[in-house]
Length: 110
Image (tube, rainbow, N blue to C red; front, side, top):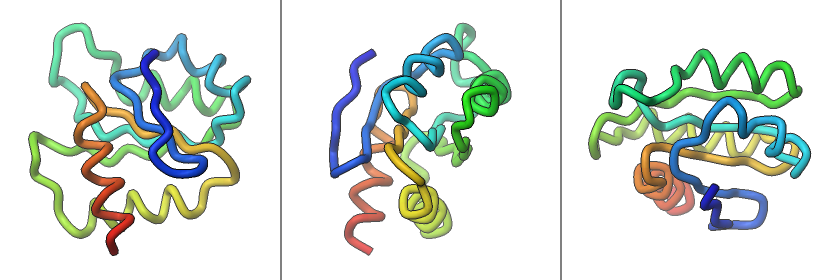
C-alpha cells in the first residue's frame, strides 16, 4: 500500500482491499473514509466488503463517494466530521488518493 501522511493522524491512500484492514488495525487506524463510489472498476471491492472487515476490527467506516471531481460542501463537511471525530489514525482512500486529497485540502481550508 502506498500510504502518505498529509496531516498529523490523517493518511491518504489509493484503493485498499478488505485484506488490508487487519494490517491497518494493527497500525492503529481507527477510521477509514472511502471516497470511491461502488462500480467504478470491475476489480474494485464493494464498499460493504471493506465496511464489514472494518467492523470486525473495531474501525469506524465512512463512505463519502465522489464521482470524478464532483465535490460539494456537504461532502467536505462529512469528511471533516469523520476526521475530527476519529479516535485515532484516519485513512482516507479512493482510486488513486486524488479525491481524498482534495477533500482533505478543502476540509483543512474550511
